[in-house]
Figure 1 (cartoon, rainbow, N blue to C red):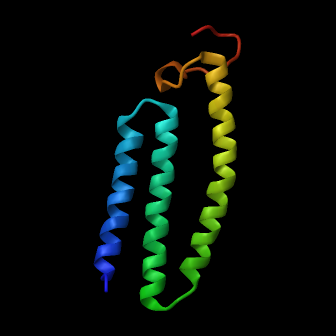
Figure 2: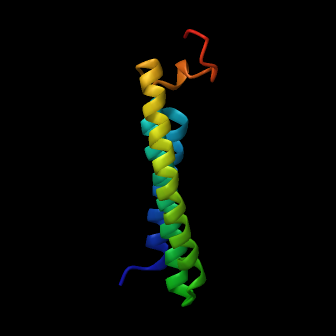
Length: 104
């Protein structure tokens, strides 16, 4: 049987890879995927402790986080498409201004 520490370690690694992806990468799509990885790391941690303590509350929170992440994914992907259509790139350095009239 896999111990609680193993699950906690895997969730911590997932979260750490997500943080590194958000900090180190410049592509906005990779940043989005890193944020999703961080959310999944937190979800794994919540489910692990729910299973360990025989409590359903963290699992309910996890289902809520997954549903909110799905809605957030739809909005974020549409924003990525709009940004790509306007700038023809996904590099975060060129998204310094939100005004429509300014040329980058």
